[in-house]
Image (cartoon, rainbow, N blue to C red; front, side, top):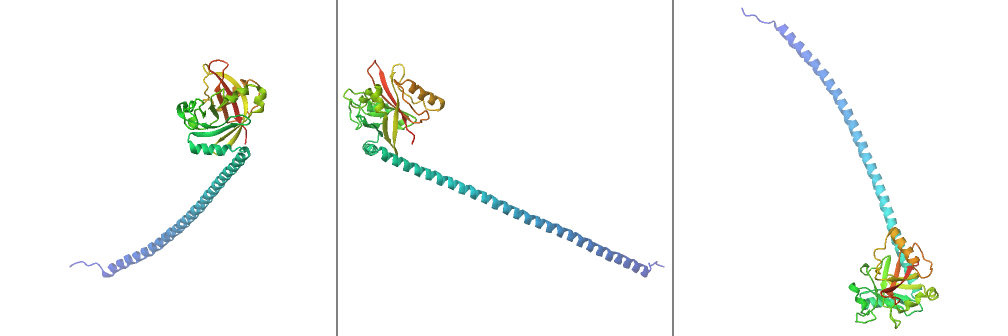
Length: 286
């Protein structure tokens, strides 16, 4: 006879198993719900964190933009201020030009510049015959050519070095003609009374007319001290150079130790072979 497991017992087992499974599912759902709630809370927190981050970034960007805008406005103000200063400086120079230019030096310079591009300025000393254009060319071309580029033993007044540009120290050359032409009148500057009465030199050049004042007159031997000062331009060396020029003067003349623009008028002299007469003038402050 075949043995059979009682159906009830089996059913009971099934029921028990089913009941256990049902209870387990309920607990699982509850657990999942709790986990979902936890994740939802975390997601909410994360979302809030992201929102705060986005807001913080937006606030930071706004601050950066505000700072950049402030910098742009400051630069604009500085630019406007610089442009305003430049305009004022041009107006000042224009007024100075008119005040100094009673004899039309700037107009003379412009007219000569138009006729000859080598023109770099116009030099004049009141109550003397020195009233000439200043030229520039390489290789001392104007030593024996006039300002019209014609061969002429009188030559022309011309600027040395600096590639034709005016700088802190400017050497301007001209023949000491016995006829009184070119730098012939500079010979009279060896006399203190004459020099004192003719200390003011006017130089018209691109964009301005400057007033210079003679502060030193002396002789130099071109054999032992070449008449070239292009290297004497900076710092203490420049200050020492000004002092040396002043100390070498044949007589005492005041000068501005802060002057940063001087012209040295150079011509031949006849005390000895290769003698040169140097008349130095500093630019008066604007």
